[in-house]
Image (cartoon, rainbow, N blue to C red; front, side):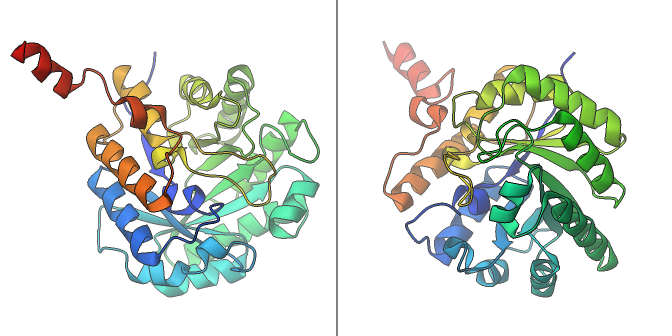
Length: 310
């Protein structure tokens, strides 16, 4: 029996843009955030507080936060890798939730945040603790949960152990991330179930990249296994600067279409998402990967009008 509703975290302003070489203005990032809110998004990953030399696209994190609209009904998430980033996010006074990251392998953890896998778990726990001290909430993502670009296969036992250790710090949820898009539905279902059982009653969130075309299948498998929240990016933009071959996130457009057609509510508006896709494609000066952004929804109201006119 499938759930009646799934929460979507819109990650296009951060994960969607961070790997793009073309500089995106602060004004356009804020327009994207406002459009996402108008489309119904109520949790949005707005930026990351990282070294601008490592991720130049996120150099305007403070300016983005300054321009965020005042919305009591929207949770603004800031991604942070360490306590220094956490303090920057807290100092803006605009971030509601800190997003910590732990990585399942040493090699990728060193490339991504300059520390071992165990060190990344310790850092995530410290970030969660600091968020709670300042009245914010925090969540944690386990990167490379389904495979590493440098070390290959990742032990499920390792991911489960990391989830347990992070859960002890009291985040609002733990996410499993397929950072390089190598997951398959069987693996996803198995790991989501194991992590759910290990961290209960904390919920599981999932984060998939569509690098090898399995993104939507993995979303479906994760929901069937009990995941409550899905990260997605309008238009399917996204990638990791430190993970070779990490192509775009699953597209909000496509995830919405699949779930809503299956009578699983997301609280979003497909028309507004597609309009934002087309606007963003103009900003990026390229067509975006989302399939529904190209094909449109179904049934299509314009098609109905043409049939009625005939």
